[in-house]
Image (cartoon, rainbow, N blue to C red; front, side, top):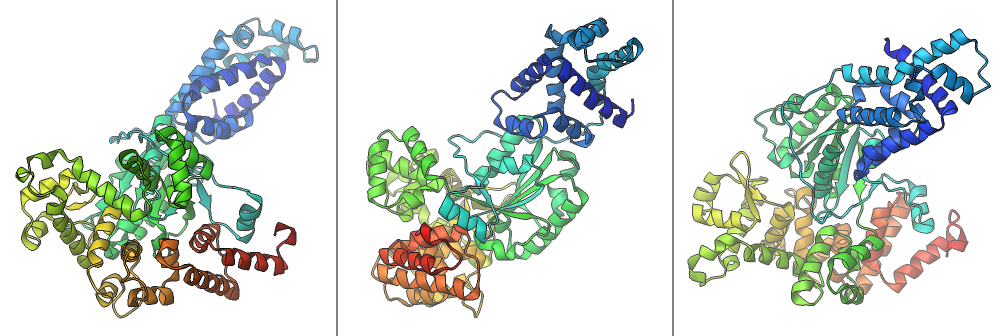
Length: 588
């Protein structure tokens, strides 16, 4: 049977079945329920593609999208119809009589009814045969993904215009979605941006697992920190053996910001070529927000990972903290709720509270606690040197040397030869470092930090021992005040550390940041400056955007308001709203 002829039969046949036998709807919905049970992504997918017969017909009209999981759905549907006595009439040779009894409006003569009967009897079998006969891609390499324990779901927001921000700020209209929603809706080219520690790598790992579990998609997740310039990206990931040019294939490339600077343009070019050669494939990229200006990939939509909602934050604390009431009360009193909205800091803050029965007051405390815990949990440290020196005290200098070496050489990993010969680190020490869960060995034999943020924090501690001129020479492009994008978070963490002592106040470093890098200070947060200085910075940033006619998106508005957080700043904004011709005064 020709595909288009079959489609017409499918559409017409289902409409007849629906009108004559309402029970068919119940069978269809039962099949959907069985097929989607305990699989949230299937539920979303089914709502988008199988919610009604028109959607089903449209989906089958594009046979390259049909997945094995959909064939499973049709088998379930067929059995539901076949075993339901109210519906199985369509498979019964007495169909003519039954249809006539069900509907007196059918006026066709007996021959036409018999012809229609023949169509109806065979329609489900035709669908089944067509689906089974479709050419199906079989990957020769399949990567199995694991679920993420304690995963905290986060939403995605798209690029906002001025009206979107206005609606969100003043009317609470939230257009954010999950990343699965965007893929199901057919958004094939996405680049996910987020601030450090927001959990974009975890979100993508969870996405790969959920897509694979649904049976509707074939995902492949590759961390770009493992990219090597020795061969094309497509060859390194063995793309043709894992995925094909279909809507069920999903290529996930994590960590554009973790590429060597010398490799970035080449990788972006290679991604563009893959995108052209595989137009139906879904491609998801991720990158730190600090690299947005240097990571433009044509044809990809920018999307942004949001922090948790306040309600989800409270719910998570109630479920995972033994004394959640005390934790929440202390967190509110200490004014740290803002940074608890970031999953990493939330989980570690709860762990810290369970151990110390107090609240960590800043990110520095969290990093110190986490790194100490990595050392304490290292089983290999038990064999080390009679316990005369704590593992961290002994190994910390090596971690600093590795981080500093990677900074000065602009490398994302360091080779064994460099560890042995340049840094004079022995094999035994390397094994101990790997045992801390801070350092890992890659597939190509190189060593790197398990997470960029750990390297950045250790590096920031090293920079605290240097003077301002030395810090600037390391974190900026030569002869400029422009901070290297890969080192922006290092600068943020360095300010966090230095601002804890009196050397920060009125220092050259502080003056330079106020003059050249106010947004860096906004990212650090209110603890780095006194109230009056924060108010001045707030009004300078606001008036600069206003004077230039630039749109301040919601993400920056949130950060800026959290940074200022003073009565004077609030009064200033309210006066601006009141005087504005474009904003309703009632909002005040």
